[in-house]
Image (cartoon, rainbow, N blue to C red):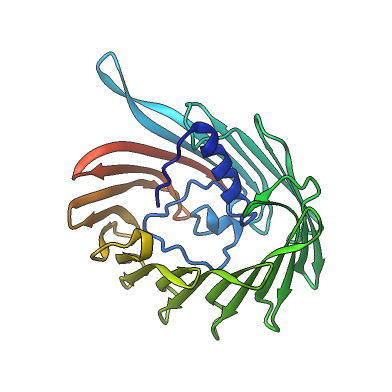
Length: 331
C-alpha cells in the first residue's frame, strides 16, 4: 500500500505514528515482496529477512544515477544492527545519505533483564524528541509497557502505557491502551487457532464499540491464505494467496470494498528462478497490465542469507527505478 502524503512534515508524522503501533516492527530493509504480511509475531532476526541468527548486520541501499554519461550507484541510506545471542536487537542505527521523505537518522538501543526479556528501549531520531519504553514482566511475558515521556500518539491520544493479557498457552489475547490521564481509550482483542496463530483481531474504543477488525486463515503449513479487514463493521479489504511447494507466494488477489471499492479483484502473480541449491535468484511479479517488479538475488553467503539483491520497479510495463541492496553479515 502506498501512502500519498501532502508534505514532508506529514510524512514524518505518519511514519512516526505507525512506527510505534507495534514497538518492534521497525523500518526494515527486508524483502516484503514474496512474503505475505502474516500477523503472527516473529523473532527480531527473522524480521530482517535472515534464515538464521546473526551477531551483526549492515545493509546499504543504493539508487541509480548518472555521472558524465555513465551509470553510477548513489547511496540512499544504511542500517546497522547488533543482535544478542538470542537474536534480539541490541542496537539499530539508520543513517541517511540522500534527502528523501522516508529516510531518518535514528538510533535505537535495547536493554535487557537477561538475554531475552526487555527492560527498556530508547530511540533518538535526529530533529525529533527522544522516545523510550520500559517493560514489566510476569512469567517471562510482557505485562506492561510504560511510555514515560508520554509523547507517542496512537489514534489521536498520547499513550502512557499498554497492558497485556494472555491465554493459558501464552498467546496475547488482549491489549489495553492508556492515555496520558491513565484512562483506557483503545482495546485490542485477539483470537487464535489450535496452532496458536491469530485468526481474528478486533479493535475497540473506550466505549466498547468495535472500530476495526481483521480476520486471517492459513494453510496446513501455516502460510497466510486469506486476510480480511473491516471498519465500522463494513468490509474494507480482502486478500487471498496461493503458494508453491517451497512456501513462496504464487499469487495474490486483492479486493477492496466501500470507499475504495474496485469492480474487479486486483491480482498479482509471481514466478521464481532457483539456483542449484534451491535459492531464489530471480522473482518476477506481474499483473494483467504487465510487470510490477523484478527482484534479482545476485549473491548469498555460506549460511544461505542473501547479501546482494537488485529491485526493479515497473509502471505501465516500463522500468520506473532500480534499488540495490548490499548486506554484510557476521555470525
